[in-house]
Length: 459
Ligand code: ADP
Image 1 (cartoon, rainbow, N blue to C red):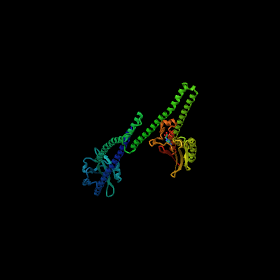
Image 2 (tube, rainbow, N blue to C red):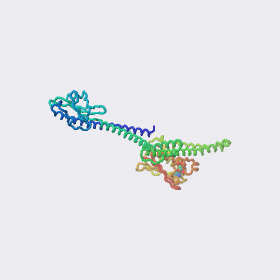
Image 3 (cartoon, rainbow, N blue to C red):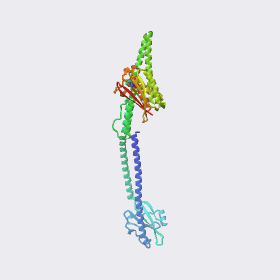
Image 4 (tube, rainbow, N blue to C red):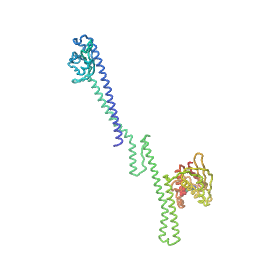
């Protein structure tokens, strides 16, 4: 069963029930009012008749005063003896007479009045029966005043019919209207479903929900869906690019290894000099692949946020360690200097933070010509952040390259970079680590003058 059908069905059913309750209530109130009015009227007429009647000296012998009273149309009156014989009746009654039920007669004899409904041939009468007392206070006769209920009954019947027809039309209109409204309201949902199934069938993440929607729940769903698809597509593209890059990066060392193995198999292994050269090349490429795999693993782990063991880290002490390693790495080729250093403690993973700084420092040393200077510094800022700078006087980065340097596998000079053993992952790893610590990394650089990398971490 579709949502549209269910919505329309329940909505229509609810309306029908409400209308039915309303119609029954309306009918009951109106009927009560009309019948009540009839009762009031026949009772007061009867009291008038009795009053005139009791004024007569000998009611049993004189003519009854009924004809003297002008009755409204459809109002009838009769006087009966205690035994139930009709003594007199109003002219409108013709040959008819109103029988008084035994029970009512007994009540009248006891001096009580009361109403009853009598159904004769083709007419329904509402009757008020009341006793007539002699001057001595004895019940001597009874008077019945009645009014036909036919007009009221047929009025009520017409009202019932009108309510039934009107209600049915209203329910039918509501069902049609409800179906149309729910179709319009649910159209975006159908489109979302269509788009989703197109994406699934065609494996095409480019698909989006088209059209302009109002800013309601369904419209928000459509725009959230589009946003989600955009994000999925980004992730998917990144994933694909990564796989392509990784395969590309692995192909070169594998080709070198394969070439060397072929060479050795074709007899070069017999020549000790060529054997050791071949093995050295193979070893070199294996080491490069190992580094690459290690870097990728590190990146994947940092991205997934695993194994980040947070604890208080004295950043100044850490920077000092990095400085000592930098001195070894530079090996006197470039100068390494420790600049301004505040004391600062952050929450973090010391191994990862050290890796971050080492990546920056090894880049700075690698891209600075001999005789250049690499400076490390640490500033504790009053706004709750700590800033670590790694500045060099190296080759710098062209402004068009700056937006890419944190991309995976990206190098300014691809061929030279790869030959020099760089993977193009160092800055991506540094950025992932900084972001995993709630921080950020940025760079300023002038080609030919040098670069300054700045890491911000929350204190
Ligand atoms: P790599 O393993 O090649 O160093 P990175 O991600 O660390 O990879 O760096 C990406 C590229 O950014 C490098 O190939 C290099 O061209 C450029 N780069 C990084 N650091 C510096 C620097 N301090 N000075 C100049 N260029 C740099």
